[in-house]
Amino acid sequence: MMPKLTKMVVGAKPSSAGRPTRDGGAKGVPKQRPPQAKELTPELRSRIAAAFQQMRNVPGSAIPLDSTQTELNLRRIHTAISQQLWVCRSLVAQVIKEVRGALEIASLDLTAQQQEQVTEMYRRFVESGERPVGGRRRHIAEHFNLSLESVVLAVRHWAQRQYSESETPRPSRQQLFEIEKRFWSRLEESDEPYEEFPDSIARELGFVTPYQVLRWVDVLYDDSKFHDEEPPVSPEQRDQIIERYHAYLDGSHPPEKSLHPTVADQVGDVTPRQVHKVLFDYRLEKRRLCLERVPVGA
Image 1: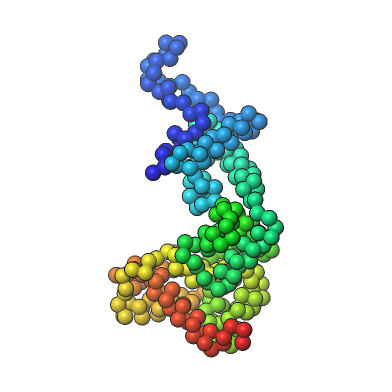
Image 2: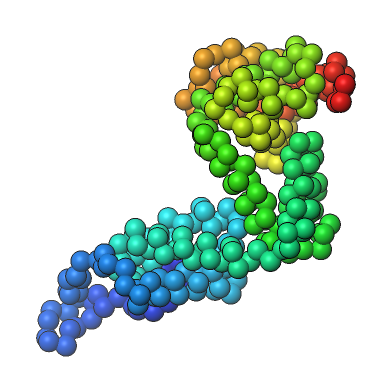
């Protein structure tokens, strides 16, 4: 278990609350703290950077630079350093962003050829929907005998470049919903080759690139969030889930909550994970039928 972040800050000192003051002040009454620092001096920048680096290097509790754990803990990190160094959070966030960027650049030690090999294999995985055991990035790292961190960074930088080409780098839920609706319509009845779906959907919508379409379709076929041993639903529940999914696709906007919890609430006696598993299998079957109708490369 990761220790409390406030214990991982460089220079953190125990609180003086409850101790007598030198000037004879009342015991247990701490002196009032001055306002938080709001000017980023070189000395303060160094202290913030050192505090963040210390958090990343505490034995047994390091925060991996490129895992979701970092993103999940950023607010806690900002708050912890802000409280211990008594600096406003915006300055802490600014310095940490700079430090992480510098660490990423320093960690990306691949040659141009290696970067191309890594991104080409990752692109093929996204296009095919293949998910090797252990994850795509780990498989690529082992295949080319590279560090996992370098592969993660190479893929991230490549993906960021793909998104930067779009007028909407971060599509809204409504826009992702429009992608899904058009993808499903083609999956069920189009004679267009499957591999051409991303290009045609992107042209039709106008606000996303083919890669963004491809990536969202890849998310729809992501089975990493449930287990094969997920308890099966009854045939009646499966029919209801699929019926609700079609009603979702026929709508003009996504529900207030995400799809799987919404359908689970509507059907009753099923979990969001069970809904996800049913829809995942259903999408697989629809894609199989589509590829039988119009084979890849036809």
